[in-house]
Each structure stands twice: as C-alpha cells, then as structure tokens.
Length: 406
Image 1: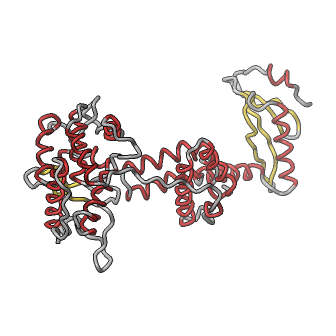
Image 2: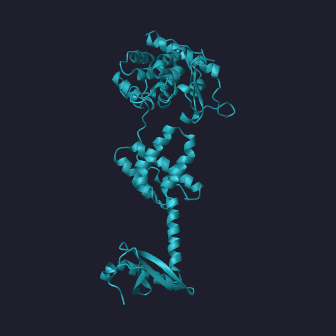
Image 3: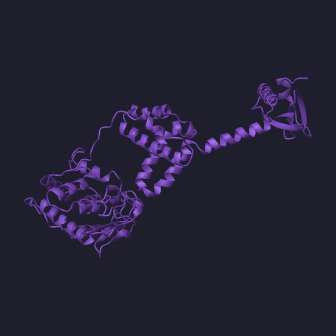
C-alpha cells in the first residue's frame, strides 16, 4: 500500500531500524536516531541492489517517487541506476576540477613565478572581481565566446574599458594554457577581436623639458610633507627604477660602501636580478634617511607601520601637493624623463639607458645581458646624470653633453 505524506512525517523511531514501503521497491528507512532515508531496492543482472534516493525531509515523498520512476526508466534501458549515479557524480567532480577558476588559479601559480608580485596581485584582483563571479564555476571547455563577451561588457559598462581589454588578455592566456593541458580545444577570446572598442592609449605623464624638470627638482627640495616621501622623490630620478620597486626597496639590498642597490628578481618586472649603481648624490640621500628607517626592513616604510612599504599612491599624491597635475607628471614619469633627456640631450648610449631601466636588452648574439653587463659604463652614466640634475636644479644653462658615455 502506498504511503501518504502524513504517514512519512509521523513515522517515529524505535529501538531498531524499520522500513515503510511505498511500492515499486521504494521505501522509507527509519533509523533509531530518528533519521529517515529513502531507499530503492532493485535487481540488475540478476543481483539485488539498493539505491540511495535521498534524505527526508530534504527529499519529499513526491520527489522520492519521481527519482524511483527515473531509476526504473534506466533499468528498462538496461542501465544500472547506482552506476549511473556514480558516473554523474564523477563527471560533476571532473567539471569542478576543470572549472575556469581552478584552471585560472593553476595558470596564475605556474606563470606567476615569472612576474613581479605587484603584477600577480593586479591580475588576481581583476580575475577575482570581474571574471570569476560570472565564469569561475563553469567548466572551461563549455564556456562560449558570448559568455566571455557578456562578462567583458559588464566591465566596459562601468567605464573601465582598459580593464576590460586587460581581462580579455588574461582570459586568452588562461585558455591557451587550458589548450596546452588538454582541458579546452581552443582560445575562445580570439573570436572577440574587435568586439570591444579600442582603448584610449594614455602614456604616463612625464616632464621631458630640461628647464621644467629643473623646476620640479627645486619643488621636491622644498617639499614640506613627510620626510620619507620627500627622500623617495629625491631618489626616484637618480636610480631609474619603477615606483613599485622604489617603494619596496629594502635596506638589505643597499650597499652604501659599494654605492649600489641589488634588487632581487622577485620584485622586478622582468624577474631578473638588477643592479643600480648609486651616484654620490643618491648615496647622500640614503645616508640622510638611514637614521630614520635604517633599523627597519624598508628604506621607505609606510606612515602607519614600518612593517609595510610606503603606499603606491604616496609619490603621486606628493606631486599633486607640489602643484604638478596628473597629466603633467607621475611617479613613473621619472623613467620617461631620463629616457628622453638622457638620449636626446646628453647623448647617453640607448642600450645603457635601457639596461639601467631594467628593460629587456639583448647582446649582438640575441642573448639577454646579465645584471653586471656594462657596469663601469653604467656607473659613469649614473654619476653624469646626477651631476646634470644638480645643474638643472641650480637653474644652470642646459648643456649638451653628447659622447660623454662611451
């Protein structure tokens, strides 16, 4: 006799497990602890088997009957319901293991070893904020170009077009990794060429006129803000490193006696060790700040705690306080200044400038130079540059110095 919903609900536990049959092999198993389980007894290939149908009340009487009927259809098709259930579970677990987010994080870990920490953080942030919520749980092999386009258009819709293009670039790299690891057939991002408007390319603002740059140097000397930030701004045009590398500079990397800073590969964008020869002026700045921060880890620690480096916004904020608009000068712009003036005004060898900027520079045989390449010439260049900046700061005439660095 078939059960009723009232009978199922009212079933009370006893000292031993007991069954309430609903017909067709389906029954409710009531345990002594009060737990109620739906079970289905059936025969397959001459063997008696039992299929776990669900737990009451999560699975109601009506739901249990529907699952029983589905199992009987499988039996009619000569399919074992228990084996089918296990196969579905395995497939679901396989999909989870090959979800976009799982593959993306695997890619990030594998290729992140070749990237600077700041780049990894930025990549993970964009994926976590703009991609994972929409595509993360989907099996990567089942994601369609339209799915990706929809996610990218959400980013574009809030006015972050450059971020949308960056996200598309990351997704393409993840898909190519998935192809290489046999979890996707192709890079679907290639189908979206032209689907997003072209971003407006904005170069980081930099002062490249020598006389105006001299005015900036004088303004920095007169800066009335935090001493740590002032020293960082004074050092920035003398050592050519990126703002992220500058603010993360550690005293352990600084050798004032040898007049150099050795940046480890872990903090460099190109993931290679980088030597910065220090001019006499740069050494003086470091000596000046050493009594204040020399007992800590960072040369330029944050205001709130010495355990973290200076904020990435500190130099740009200081430039704004000095009256230099973001369209005129940025912390990153110091690199563009030396690249332009060093080449066009002072006539420094371009390969020496590029090497000191920690850009990828190849020798005549196409091999990457090591960190000590041309070190004597670079030391000479750094001192000539510092001396030239002193003249600009003093308001001296801009003098052409072509050919001083061989």
